[in-house]
Length: 248
Image 1 (cartoon, rainbow, N blue to C red):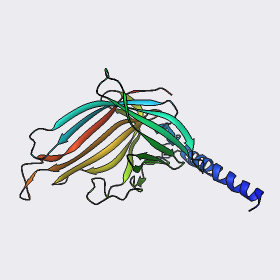
Image 2: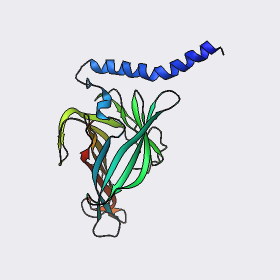
Image 3: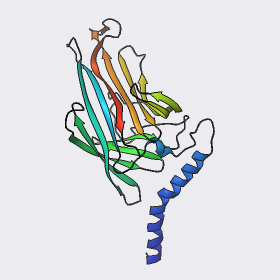
């Protein structure tokens, strides 16, 4: 391979993601009823030093226990640094800290990467690679957010596709109101006789994640028969709600 051809190959691998992003942004600027005509990264902003603080409420039901165990704490996600991989994709390093309440000290509990591709975000966390968003933002799209995972059929996340809803609409988290948001529905199965599965995330323009709701329950059965109407036997509900964030 000549020096010239090697130079061309290097240039092509570095500018290809930029070209793809320009194409996506151009398509985004063509307004129609289905597509939000803005920079898609506005709903998932990434900048060094940016932080978000959430309050977490978790309710855990266990078989044989009359009452669930309720826990509350706070988490802070903060972007520490950014690098690029061999083809020019930005990789953001994010640290997660935890404290019991606003009067406690933060303790770092983990860190993870976010890969910012022109057509998607990949979240590499807890040894799993998940795709929380794809671009362009379009309500007609759906995608397998767990495409990089080999999920077992017993996994509560198995068999569902992600989709956009309520794009550009205002939303109240119960703590704050945001004028322009979108909802990503990750799984919905709330009418089943033996199980309840639901997961969704709300994102705000210029802010990022503002609400994350996850719930997976098994209803109580005795000798294969339901005991009562949707009596929860085991499972977990978690609500993650934004309470503070850095202004970009």
